[in-house]
Length: 449
Image (cartoon, rainbow, N blue to C red):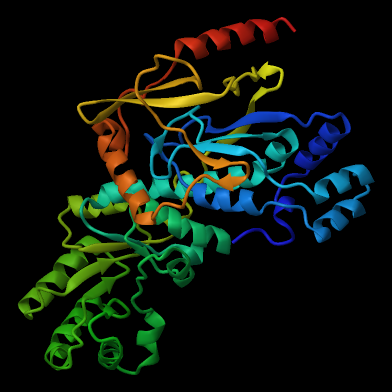
C-alpha cells in the first residue's frame, strides 16, 4: 500500500525546495545517506530492524506522476525546467540494509542509501516513516514475546492504531517481533499471517440468554470457537460453557478456548480454570485480553495466572510507553568526500560505513562501526546490498524466516538487555580506528570554519 496522489509527494516540502536548488546548481552527483536511530527509546535495550520490504516497494515504484507535477506547478515555487526534470525521475540508486528482524543500536545505519542527490533526498520522508514505525512496533512485539515466554500472543491493535496504513504494517511488524498472528484480515491476506478472532460482547448481548449466545457461536464455528465469557459474570460464563459441553462435544463444536477481557485477570483465570477443570474441560484454554502489554503479562504470569495465550492491542500497535523511534537520515558522503554534522547533541558520523557484530560463545558481545572498505575489522558485517540500480537485489524473505531471525537475535543478546527494564551498561558500539581517525580529522576541519 503506497501513498495516493503519486508516491513522490509523500515527502516534506523542504525536500522539494532543496531538490529544486540542487537541480538549478547542477548538484546531481550521487551522495550517501544513513538512516539511523540517535538513541534507544526509554526502557529499550535494543531495536528490531523492520520495514525494509515496504521501503524497497516504495523505491521501486517511486515517480512523480502528472497530477503530482500539476500540483507542484500550482504552488508557483518551481520552474518549468525542474518540473520537466521530475517527469523522468526514478530512483536509480543502491541500498544496503541491516536484515529485517536483526537487532540494531544507536548510530548504526538501518539503511544506507547511495543515489543521485535529488533522488536520495526526495525519498527521505517515506523511509523515515516506514522504517521508524515498523521498527518501533517490532521492538515492542519482541518485548511482549519476552514477557510471554513460550506462550503465544496475537496482534489485536488495528482498531486503535494511528490509521489504516499503521495498522496494516503494524501487524506485519508485530509478527516480525514475535506475534503468532493478527486480528486484521487485510494483513492476513497481504502477508499470509494467521488470523485470530473471538467474539464481541455485542454478540452475547444480542441474545436474550447468554447460554444461547455461547451455544450458537460454538455451533456456527465448530472446532475453532473462542467464547467470550465476561459480558455479565465471568465465572458464571465459565459454568455455562461446562453446562453446554456435552451438547457441543457431541456436535464436534467444543470451543478451543474461553476469553477473559476484563476484571482481575489473575484471580478470574484461576477461578475459570477451576470451573473448566472440574467440568472435564482441561483441553479448553484460557485466552486473555484487555489493555495488556509486556509489563502486565509479566505480572500475570509471575503471579501464576493459568492463561494460555494473549491478545495485545493498543499498547502493541502504538508502542504506548515509547511511541516513536528517533530515526534520522543524514548525509554521510558526497563527491567531495565524507560529510559530518557537528550540531550540539545531534552529531552524525561521516563516510560510507559497515556494522560488524562480534559474538562470543553464541552471545552478542559488541558491535564495531567501521568505514565500509576498512580492513581488519572484527565481527560479522550486517549491512547487505538489497537494491542496485533502483531494483531489488533479491527476492523478499519469507516472514517466518524474518521472525525466526528476530527470535535468535534477541536470544543472543546479553540477558541484562533482554529484560523489560534493562540494567547495567548499554550494548557497546565501538568506532573502528579508521572511523575514529576520520571523525577527528573532520571535527578539526569543520571546527575551524
